[in-house]
Image: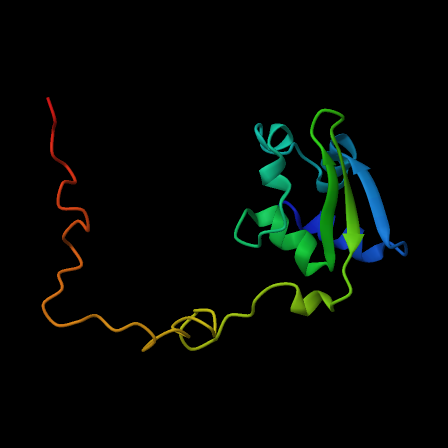
Length: 129
């Protein structure tokens, strides 16, 4: 069991659409401290699944964060309309990559003779005195 799995279990057990929590309450649920910088940065509480482990836990439980107040040290978890299993992109078993990886393959054409390692601006890197 991961450090934040208890939060996912707690959220899944809630019957309400919104679950307001203080950061201290979250720490009691997980049985430990939040990372030192997490309470200070609203971005840590974003709903980007690549953000951090705890984000994936609340998304998998079927919730999103809203009304993050870092000064008051509180957040509201809101139940999503989608099923919890749809909250995170599924990985393919074969490659371990997201199924949309490479979806744009073949959409970009690079003309012959173009060196993508060269700077686009011919003056890039020049020092002017």
